[in-house]
Length: 340
Image (cartoon, rainbow, N blue to C red; front, side, top):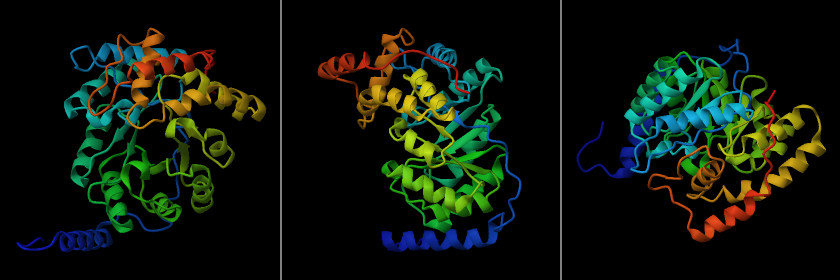
């Protein structure tokens, strides 16, 4: 495909042409083909599991299972996300992910499903990673688009179609352009929902998220279940516009569950009151590179984690940051109730 002396721009155009050609010949579905949708297994509050590390930097399997038990006891019954951004999935070895996923699935023993984050930048790597996750018991796959060479719409269709052909579990398209610089407009998400068999969900993290959810709901109808992310900063507006779940971090699950229950019970005033109380900490944890450290320090404070070790390039809070976090922590309640 590529020849000596070919410029990088020419190589990219050649790649995109090849992808478009393969997509025309291999796309497994045509518009209107997809008529039967799965039940909404992933909805409500689905926290992204932090990944605990030992003092020597190795993964702490027992620590992760303590996190799972803590979250389950404090309301997280709809499922768990593994290896997302809040779980430092970008810093884990493939062998570590396999070991951790196997342990979590066995530990839960069917009590709640696990959806696995996949951030491979190549199609073949993504396909193999998704197949491995399914084989280890994942109930769903949260898949970022390729973000090193960013394909066009046809290339994205080809990428997600290739994964769908290889697995038999639901795919959640992670629409996170702040991270990937890949734009996925509502029309493209609707096309994926119609034409790609296992694309059943989308996690909308493309600001402004609430209008994006409105436009996507209008485009896809009931073909795609939408969830929010970005630590729930606009979870109320997103719910009002049609989202069916939220995937926040691990440290305030009881608060998120209380907000979600209030929304589902049409108690908007209560939802806003709970949200406003938690907002300073939600905002603090949205700092790029520092949010995971804040989450881990909160779980350390609660006695769930043995330490707050993060793995480079994740950054640790400095002494001033720890004092700021201590001042904010008292603003968030710990009253828990299972999400319904």
